[in-house]
Figure 1 (tube, rainbow, N blue to C red):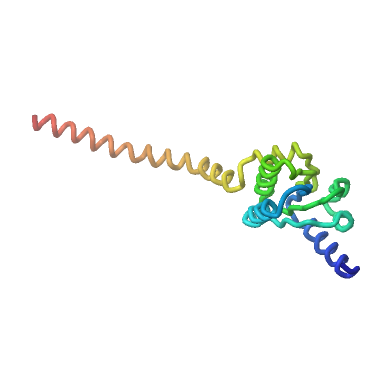
Figure 2: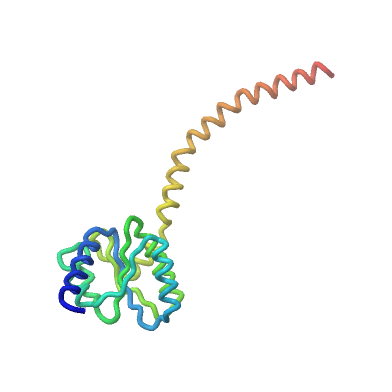
Length: 172
C-alpha cells in the first residue's frame, strides 16, 4: 500500500468516524474465515460497516474526531464496526458473537463521543432495538384512543343487549 492509498484510507475513515453514531473495536485474532464471514454478513444486514484496519491508520483517522478515545485501544489485530442510525444493533451482534466465540474479543466502543467499556457495550446490547422501542411508544400512544373507542362502542352494545333482553322477556 503506497502513501496515497494510506492517506485516502485515513481521510475516508476519519469522515466515517465523524459521521457515525457509534463505533466498536474488536480483536478478531483466532476466529476462522467461516466465523468472520458470518459476522460480516450479520453486521451488513444490520447496516453496519465492518472492516479490518491497520492500527496506525486508525489512530491517525481517529485524531480530532468524536472517536479519538479509541486510539488507546489500537493494539494487536483490530477490526472496527461503524454503526449508522441504530447503535444497539451492532452492539447486540458483536456482544453475542464475543459471548459465543471465545477467540473474538471486544476492546472498546464510542457512542456519540462517549467512550464505552466492554461492560457498557454489554449493557447497550441488552437494550431493546430501535424498532422495538418505536413499537412500544406507538402502543403507548395508541392505548388511550383504543380505550376510548372501546368505551364508546360499549354504550350502543349495552343498549342493544338490554333491548334484546326486554324483547325476549315480552316474548316469554
